[in-house]
Image (cartoon, one colour):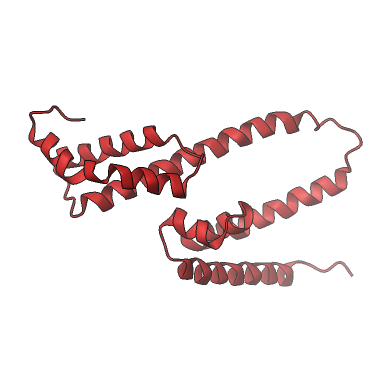
Length: 181
């Protein structure tokens, strides 16, 4: 928070602080139990104030504050997902030397996952985000819309486009694959 006697403090009190309760409620509703609310709010304030100090043009301080908080929440959520995956990797790796594992099946599964990953990476950015959140993370259309700050209609339309492009990718891959007759 800026010093109490500065113009920045006045700007903070007039433009940002009145939205504190709404921002916290919005974060709680959109990112329940996945983010540290106080850290996100404080960091969002800090970043918006820094942008204001730099002289960046901020037409709508409220919108800028919410967008900043959303981005921070998503970053924190992604970071926690990576941490979870690291823990999973450590526990799953203990089963690697399990000789009962069906090696051909495991290799085929790894190849299928690699092809799926390549197909998803070929999608346009918005389609890729939506397909990943919907199909990989299992979020609802409403949750995806809230996370990405877009309408549910856009999620539906872009998801349909993404699935169509994935189908085209796999059809093309199948046509190009040599046949073993």
